Length: 390
Image (cartoon, rainbow, N blue to C red):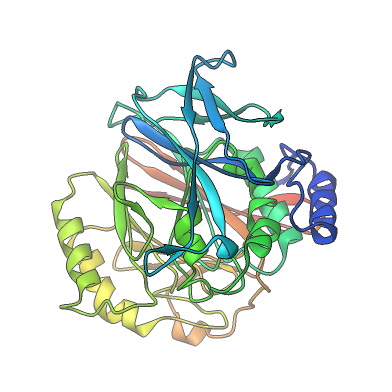
């Protein structure tokens, strides 16, 4: 194992100070800018467009200035969006400002900031997807970030220091409950995740704790149709990524099952990656999910899925069954789970009771998986390494 002290992009002490400020003043600044409840972040960077979202303090919207340099040669106005019920806006439930950037060429680094009537955010950035289908890139995976924002901050700070990811897959349970308020989302997700959010699109799947959250649909977008509901997929370089909502029906004949079957059958990308919340194989507290084994595993095998990510158990584990690599990465901040059910997962290869994240280096002919554990002193240690080929 390799041990490495990660010099996070922003220090843990600064993140903890921000969290303390947020507890005292829940509708004041995130970070150092008192004009934003939620600092600007990027979503849905695909094709020739991207979305920037933010939440100002007070009754203002603002606009995005963006360009290939900090001269910001273009701008796009922001539009306020609310949680709705039966089509009726519910301002007290939560809101966000959204701006759509269009006409973006592939594989281009963009700088952006949000300008309000009396302030502006600092410079932030994102990169559009590669035009070359064989381009190399890295993506990150972690999940179950609920409950402990300090642990979540350590995971994100370490992850942001190990690589510059194209996107982040989250394996669900972002916050403690579907009814979590906007203030809880800010303190438990947006503040600790800022080192990655400021530059990297997050792709989410619903966990059991946020299965019906309306704020999740407001804050995150799915490639293509924007709305994060149950299932979606996207391509990035050589990788096809797909998810479904494992809290809902996915047995044969269901809408989700039919989507997944048709989606996997139609893709021509050499690597197929699935992510959902409930694990097919786990030897921790919740254990293996028999329905995933019964209904989804045959589809993974029939259509050549190589890598399956899940959360739900708050640990790290890698299992190989029928040449498919199954990874549990649920150590983003929730109370950790120890190994309890090894007899029910005889194919388990690596298990760690630790806060963790995974980065996947994508090349034309291989996926290289590296898992890191993060301890309370901000030390990140490599705990697993694996290479996956088509």
